[in-house]
Length: 335
Image (tube, rainbow, N blue to C red; front, side):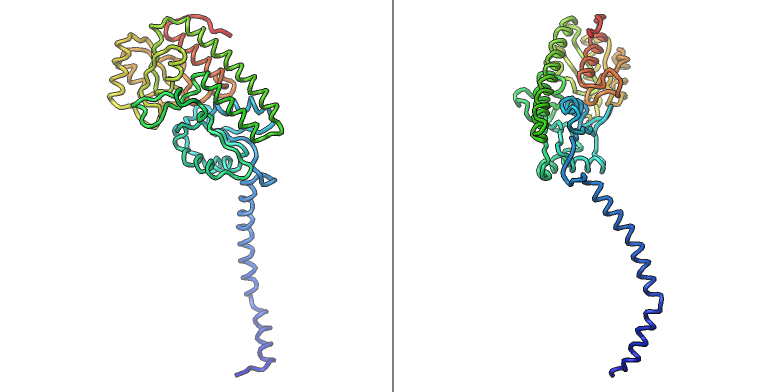
C-alpha cells in the first residue's frame, strides 16, 4: 500500500528529531583520534620529504668510522651502543624504522649481526628508492678470512682486530657515503684517506709495541674467540672459551681445555670482556689458579663516551696496552 506523502514526511521529521544523529556523532568522535594516531605513526616513520635520510650503522666500530668520514654532512646513528653485543642484539621496532628510512645502512656482515640477519637481508633485497646498503666486511678478500672447523659454516667475523683488514672496510664505508651523497663526495674521499692513514699509523705502532713483549709471553685467554685476527696480525696465540659467537655457551670441555692450556703454558693472567658475562672466565681462573686482569678487554663494542675506548683507535690501543701490560711488560704506553 502506498502511504500518503504527509504520513511519510511526518515520520521522517520524527526520525530526525531522535537521538540517532548523536550516536553517529559519538562514533565519529571516537574514530577521529584513531585516524589521527594512525596518520601520526605514518608521518613519524618517514622523513619530511618522504625520502630516506641519514646513515644507520649496526656496530660501534662502523658508527665511529662513519661519523669521522661523514664530518657532519649526514647524521649518523648507531644501533649497538657501548657494551652491546651485536651477536645477540635484536632490533627494536624503533630500530626497524631507522633501518627502513635510512639513506645509507652500514652493517658488518659475515654473520656478525646474528639476530638482525633476517631484517638486514630484507632491507638489502628490497631497498627503498634512494636507499643504499653496504656490508663493510664483504669486500675483504675471502682468502684473508679465518676459517676453522670449530667455527662451523661461517668465517670468523671479528675482522676489525686486524688494522690492515679494517682499512679495507673503512674504504668501503667512504665509498658507500660517496654513493649515497654524491654532492659531498669530495669531502668523504678526503676524510677516508686521512682516516686510513691514521689506521696505518696505529698498525705500525702496534707492530713496534708488540715487539717489546717476548714471543713466549704472547698468549691470551679470553671469554670468547674474538681475537684471532689480532693474534695473526700481531704475533699472539689466543684461546677463547666460547666460539666466535656469544650465542653459544662454553661447555665443560671448553673449560677443561682452557685450564690445561693455562697450566701448560704457565699463563699468569687471563682476560674478561666488557660485552660477555664473566661467569665462565671466573670459573676457569679459579680452576687454573691464575688471575683475571682488572682491566676488561673490548671485543664487539666500544667503550662509553669519554672513556679511553670510546673510539675505534682508542679501543684498539687500550686493548693492546692492557694485554702487554698484564702479560709481563711494564713499558710505558706510547702516546
